[in-house]
Length: 224
Ligand SMILES: *Cc1c(COP(=O)(O)O)cnc(C)c1O
Image 1: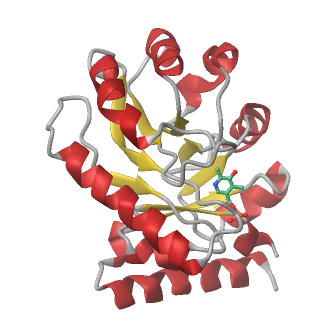
Image 2: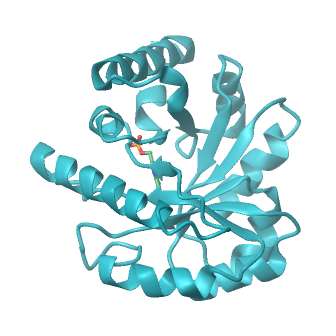
């Protein structure tokens, strides 16, 4: 399979999942996660017609950014854990940050950002100890602490399901994340539109789309 074939397959599967869910295809943005390949291959994939690129680590994000920043209409997503001491190196190249998982990290981003950073609050719906993200019972308090950070815009929620989750468990996690997003959106806090859901990877994006994912983060399926 070539990159173009993989790209066509991923896009048609997303389209199909949208149809099945009765959703408009434009309501789902496909982020190509390029962490498995070098900048050259990532660039070739982008040229097949990709407009969202994602990396999970700061060093790899910066490598790709340096090599591909001149490509037109590319939106840059940092999707993985960010350490506070690395915020200043990367944050001003980021359009969307998907893994906001502590108030201190948000404060550091607010301090270093020279433009508004669209952020997803990472939530640990399955309450797995090993996972990053806020627990359900922490969220309301966290929002009050983020309310006055003017460079942070909370566009929505991000979740990652456990790798060994059954289909049933996945559905439950995605559904709960969507319900939580709706509840938070109803608070109508000014820097927290909470309209977006970042969930779904190569193995589970169809289920995530069924439960209203608006950004899917897909790596493996593009490069296998
Ligand atoms: C690697 C990664 C993905 C993509 O996972 P695939 O299973 O390869 O599609 C999505 N989100 C995050 C945070 C990742 O690190």
